[in-house]
Structures are given as C-alpha cells and as structure tokens.
Image (tube, helix red, strand yellow):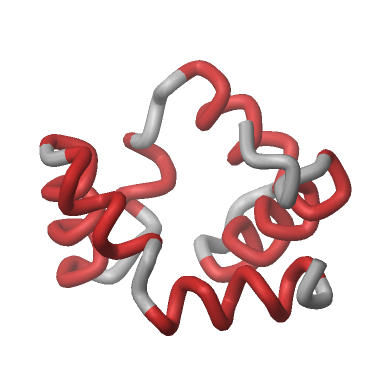
Length: 82
C-alpha cells in the first residue's frame, strides 16, 4: 500500500463516502473489506453506479480515474496534502 495512505486518511475517506452514500461508515468499510459493493451501489445515483461497475470490471479504467486531477485534489483535501 502506498505510504501516503494511512489508517487515519482511509478512515476519513470512508466517512466521507459513507456520508455521501447515506450509509454508516462501519458498514461501508466492512463491505469494502469483504469485496461487497451491492449496498454502496444501490445508494449511488444511476450514472455513478454505472461508472463504478465499469471501473470494477476494468482495473486500468479505475487506475485512470484515480490518477485524474479531481481524484488527486480529493485525496489532497482528505489527507491535508500529506
């Protein structure tokens, strides 16, 4: 795992995503750890859910999305630029 990601930044990210998905952070984290995304997907808007499912099926697409400027900006906000 990249050293930039530590438990605190992962916890913050899970809390932010859980809030957007209207889920409890503990539930989201457990599902992510188990590789179960059904509950998260059903809480997304249909367009985002479709993009997420495409990314799961195509790791290079997910990597491209995560390396984009918006993803990097979000990461910097969450981690405080660390």
